[in-house]
Amino acid sequence: RKEVEQDPGPFNVPEGATVAFNCTYSNSASQSFFWYRQDCRKEPKLLMSVYSSGNEDGRFTAQLNRASQYISLLIRDSKLSDSATYLCVVMDGGFKTIFGAGTRLFVKA
Amino acid sequence: DTEVTQTPKHLVMGMTNKKSLKCEQHMGHRAMYWYKQKAKKPPELMFVYSYEKLSINESVPSRFSPECPNSSLLNLHLHALQPEDSALYLCASSQEGGNQPQHFGDGTRLSIL
Image (cartoon, rainbow over all chains, first blue to last red):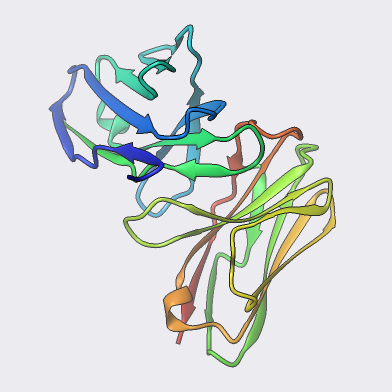
């Protein structure tokens, strides 16, 4: 079993749609969780940190479920510019960092 | 514009060459990271420095040699690389203490002939 698993997609959605991604992790001792987006041939960019209480940034909402060991990302009112690969990241309490394989999103007009 | 700067942007080298990748950050971060990313794959952690000391080496072959001359600079020295080492090499930095979000440079695209 991989340490961090994501559905690779692709997710093809129309503009304005709501789309959700999940990411599961195997190490119950994992402590920090993040979502990054990566555009083709670019570097990963931090989208948001993920907390058990949930956090929202505009159209984006992230949630952590420690009991079931998954994190989620919800994108509302999708824009064409949201097309990218979304990577979940898990850290173990120190510096060890594991990326999920990424979920590709295509938003179409 | 990224606050983590990597040079060069592109590098082509032969298997017998020696070259270095450079990374610089001016965010006052005390942790710096090297990642390798192959096409259509996620970044894979190679090395982590914390307070200029090597904290993590993810069993990386010795043909990759990291160096952290000061808290703002991180180098990756390359020698006798193999064609399978062709990849995007990403540098990142974060605040100290672990568990912090990382900020990435835009990478060096490396091709080994």
